[in-house]
Image (cartoon, rainbow, N blue to C red; front, side):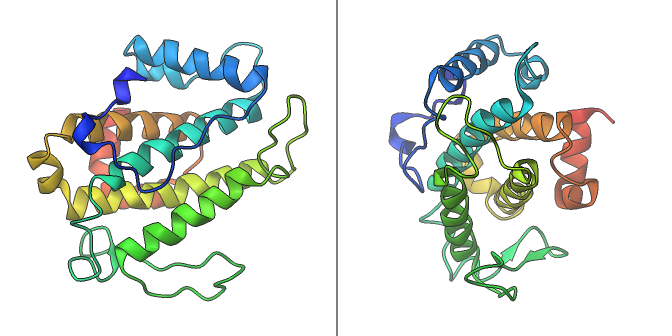
Length: 215
């Protein structure tokens, strides 16, 4: 996907890249995403293709957005250290604590890098769970599927918020700001199209979100 290609020097990812759900449907939808993204019209690219199942569309795109934020954060791992970012923040007013409801039930304060590590582990576990993200064509999605997708998007937004508030100058020095901005615009347009993130969660970057959505 050339639109989101990074220069070869920054191909380090925080996690191995995930593939879209296998089976002809996943591959077909991936081709549609690639084709519409290639047109440069992100508003068009996020829309549910006519006649397609919304859960299939959410699933393929959720994998794509995981890969994007994974690559972006991968460029910053040497700068986003526990010494530089001892807590997971998005500016002075917002701090995020980690809990997954299973291994860690009570929210704990962790460094930004540890938060992102926990988050990527958690998202990967959801994507790899065939009871949540079915790999076989025609396999049913669980009743709570869209709730899981909303949680993935809500938490992924926090990574963008941290990057913009704490590492934007580093992104500029790496000449990756256009890539970051395009990825975030795509993410916001998709999340808004399918109501995946509550408005209040967007507060740390609301001015930027507002300019993207032109509210």
